[in-house]
Length: 207
Image (cartoon, rainbow, N blue to C red; front, side, top):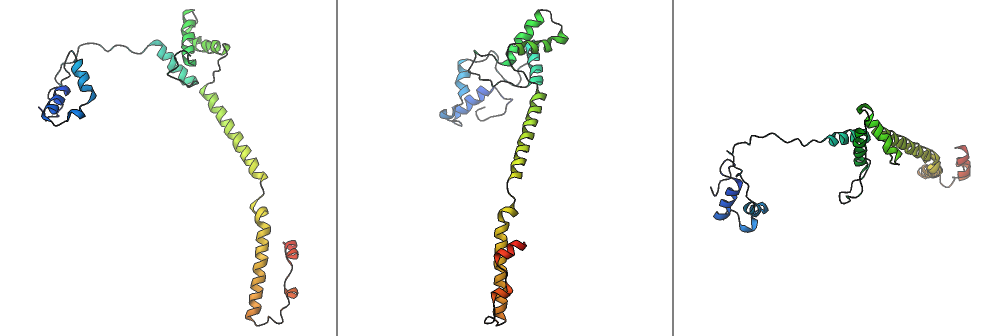
């Protein structure tokens, strides 16, 4: 028993007790639940062969849960929920309370959800459906893209920004190549730059 970890033998408490007594697990490594189990043992030991209780599962789905589910499906989560703040009610909770109030007053079920939304809006609470939020996000995204596109068009192109410098570099390269050709042909003494080259101003004007 001391070294067995097979779940069908004894309870988890008895198995842990045997491991502690045998020294397989040190007292310093004892799990927190062990002392809690010893202080408050269950009425029936949780062993594998314990018979199942003959009782029905209690219903834990309440009518307001259905209202919350429909509210979240239509309006999403409009609030930032702070669990530490229990005084301020969320929009969903206000909606549920108003829904139950109108239901007790005799409003037909077919119109109850819509009537509750109207009442909530009249209290100054802003309600927007999920579709409206998605449409608003798409419009905002399109506006940002349009703004970025117009800003990009206003910037000078790369040709306008770097074109003049590129033409000057090309002009200098042509001079260097021409000078190199004359040196290779041993015609440097007879070389006159004014005969073969154009000025940068003339070169730029032709471009």
